[in-house]
Image (cartoon, rainbow, N blue to C red):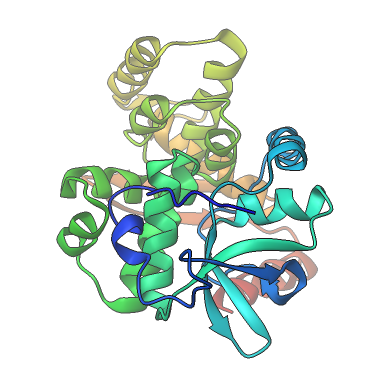
Length: 285
């Protein structure tokens, strides 16, 4: 078997060095001796794409060696998990690998670089990868940006996506909305407002420009008006009240003035008070 060495791009090409070889910069390793990376930023692997790659591997083999490091039980993947999964699916017993001594930081950095260069990460996975690397190794946004060859503002924009409502992040991950949509939704502070607008984007097929107009209209509608009970409120505060009402299962009132305020949680029996108190204890952890 002759395997052509292929440079993956900046970062990986320079990293394939100081390896165990059999004369051609790789060796064939039992696929069962290889385990997935503990720091792989990519979480979702498209089953159809894996099947297509598996069919290709059945006919052509694994053209590009996997990058691994030694572990206590064999080898751990640094880059190439998709190829490894597809090779297993194809029934291969051995795959070509290149071995590198790499720290957790280097492994995560390489995995991020490979996935970004191949456009394999969805925006939330990419944001979590940056966050993981920054927190684990105490990196600033500037340092993170230099490692992956991006502008600091780009890294910052990805990290901001993590502030989205969980449901909105899910829609972004599955591609129901674009990163452009998500950046516009970040203009809405309340998660409930983000969710509601996200649903409208999907149901009505709103473009990013349409979404910008919808959010502008919503924010302009933030002028305080009296509700049915004569309280001064805004659409944003009503969203917060609705969200808290869903959480606590009872009526919640939010009062705000110049960015400060309070909220009141109503209860109608001591049993209900104890239930709410228990929920607050669980939030505290």
